[in-house]
Structure formats: C-alpha cells, structure tokens
Length: 214
Length: 355
Image (cartoon, rainbow over the protein chains, first blue to last red):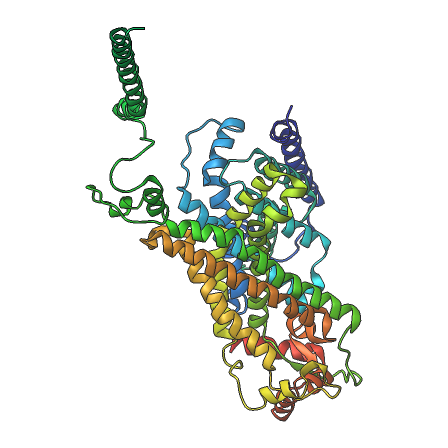
C-alpha cells in the first residue's frame, strides 16, 4: 500500500469516523448540559426567537456594522470561498463521488476554483492578521485558535499546490493534512461550524421569550 | 615481347584502365549521390532532410537559422517563419546564468550582512527609560494591511525562491523528482496568491502614501549617521530608509505585479519576447525586494528595541518616538496625541481607523 493509498484509504476512514463521532459526542455533551429553567414571564415565543436569530445573526446588528466590517468581510470571504472550493471544486467532487456518495454534482470551472480559493485565502489571512495585530484579539487568542487557523491554512495551501494533479506526493500531503484536520476538528474551536446553531438558538430563545429581537 | 605485342598489351591495359576508371567513377558517382537519393526517399516518406543544396553552405544555412533569421511561409502565422527564436536562447542563458548567480549573491550579501550586524552589534537599544506614556503610531487598518501584505510577501518570496534557486540548492539534496514536486507546488501557490498580493499591495501603497514623501531633513538624517550615530538624528514619521523602502516597494512591487500578470496571462502579450522580458523583470525586482526586506524585517522585528510595538500594538513608547522619530513625536505630543496608557492608545488607534 502506497502512502497515498494509506491517507486516502484507512487513515481517511479513521479520520472521518473520529470527526463524526467526536462532533456527535460534543453536541450530545452540549445538549446534556441543559439550561436553567427560565422563570421570566413569556412575552413571545422562545422557539420563534431561536429560529429568527439563526438568520438575523448572519448580519451584524445596526450600529455594529461599521465596527465589525473588517472581520465581517474577511469572515464571509473565507467561509464562502472555502465552501465553494470544498463543495464544488472539481477534484473534491470526483473524490466525493468515489468515496462518499455517487450522486451527480456540479463542479466549478478551473477559473472559478482559482478565484474562490483566492477569496478564501485572502479571508483566512486577514482573519489571522487581525488575531495577531488587534490588542484585544492578541489577548483572547490561545494555542487552539492558532493551530486551527494554521491547520486550515495548510490544508488549503497544500490543496492548491496539488492543483495540477501531476504529482502524487502533493496529493498525499494534502490528504494527510485533511485527515489531521478532521481528527482535530471535534476537539477544537473549529467545532463552531456546528455549535454556532446552538449558540444562536440559545441566545435567540432567551431574548425571544422576553419579546426582544435577538 | 614484340612491339605489336606490346602495343596490344598497352591497348588491353588501356581498356582495362578505362574499364576500372569507368567502374570507379560510376561507383563514386553513385556513392556521392546516394545521400541525395536516400534523402529524396526520406523526404518522400515525410522525414526532415539532413542536408541542403544550393549556393549557401550548410554551416551558413544553419548559422542563419540558429540566429533567428526569418524565412518565408505561406501560412497566416508569420511567427512560423522563424525556425529558432534566438531571444528564447538568450533568455535561457540569462535564466540559467547571471540571474541566479547575481541574484543569489545579492540575497546572500543581504543575509550575511544582516546576520553579521545582528551578531556584532546586536539591538539598537533605547537610551532613555520608557515613560509609560505612549504615542499611537499605526492605525488598526494600517497594521492589518501591513501584516496581510507581509504574510503574502513571505509566501510568494519563499515559493519564488524555490522556483528560481531550487535547481541549485534543493536538487543536490532532495533529488530531481522531489524538486520537481516542490517546484510544481510552489508555482501553483505562487500563481494563486500573486493576484491577492497585487490587490493588498495596492491598498497598502495608498494607505501609506501620505507620510512617505521625501522632505527636508531626510537626507540630513542619513548624513548625520542614521542608525549608527550615537545621538540618533531626528526624523519625521518615517526616516529616509523607511521612505526609500516604501518607494522601492512602490516601483519594484508594481513592476513585479505587472510582469506577474503577463506571466499568468500570457495571451495578453502577442510576443514571446514580452514573456521573457516579464520573467526577467519579475525575477530581478523580486530579488531586490527580498534582499531589502531582510533588512526591514531585522530592524522592524528585532533590531530596534520597541519598534515592533508600533506594528503589533499600534503605539510606541514616548521615549522611542523621541529617540527615533523626534520631529514626528514632538508634533504628536504637541497635538496631544500622546496618551498616558496603552488602552487609551488602542482606543485612539481604533478611532483613527473608523474616521
């Protein structure tokens, strides 16, 4: 078994298993924490508040727009670029069809892949730059934040380096980093990709019950 | 032998001689004509002829081809009239010779110079005590853009160096296959990140434009010994060295950006010579910027005590400001921009960003 076969075979399945089980374990753990009984007089539906907040929090609250414009823009650049590359990049589509599902799926043209990757890179670097140059962010960032940022960056960089698909070692490097990223994911703040729903829901329910737009 | 017998013998010898000569000439003629015959056969089969005929000798003919002489073609693409593009060979000779040689020498001198200076001299320490009062130096936006450009510059610089010097530095250690993979990967990353760098650098040049004009006192700073003077000569927000670094990025970076675009999109240029020129300009400017950046990184991050605070925290100690950029610091103090504590400076920097 070659190294490429190993990282695309046994290690890949192990990483996916750790990712799924770890994420599930984390979510169940959060849900099992429960929440204190809310004794306030309900003025509106908490459920509606929880659902509304899921969507309302995609954009900043009125007065915060300008203050958050930097990380709002960088955050959207990174996430939209990343999802486009991840879900619609031709090599990813082919890999997914061979290893995960066999449904027909559209893929981006080459130039689309490159532009999406550039947007994602710009966004990720801008977010990291904020982390190392904003006095408040410097103080609240810990190892986990930096490892998560760098691991994601290396996954993206190795992927782009393997874009020509002419060297097996580059593909193997990319896949190895993807496997490591998947294993690291459930035990880090990368889990925000899943937990943001619960976080927004909790806040939305809390304020929604009190009749406040979350 | 009778005279008649002798005559007959000579006649026979003559006939034999003629016969031998005839055979000789016939064979020689056939031998001389054999390549032409074979060539005719090969040409008919579609292969390239190995010789030429006509008044021009083979060597002259080949010389003119190798020097890029234009012939005649009946197809629309007139570029096909040149069998060998001489400029391509010239470019290859530069790419494989003086460019990596002198580029390596320049970067090497810069590296050795910086390391040697760091070892022999060490840090430029503050002469006075820190006051605790700080002066906002770079707004949040300026710092973000600077680090964004710096991150991309490092990534592009490293991948570019691999592409240019990998053959000499990595191949002997890693082998040709590994170098091929690394250089291939480097090129992909280089091409992908390059356009982002162009946008980021353009924003940075606009943001830092205001304070980077040369003005009265800049050259005095240099003439009085710059960093090396015991009593640090006064300067504005940026000294002569920093302003020169800015303009080096402005011109060198722009040349890198334009030539880089031509290299990524070769169809923008109709002529391959444009590509070759773009490559040389791109490499030379990048080498100069990389060599100069080593000094910038050393002085900014480690070499000058307190300097990095300006670019990480956004503010510098009042003592640092007065020692290194006296005219700027005095002006800031006069304008009441100097503040008592770091948190105030952070707020001041954020306010500056939002206005």
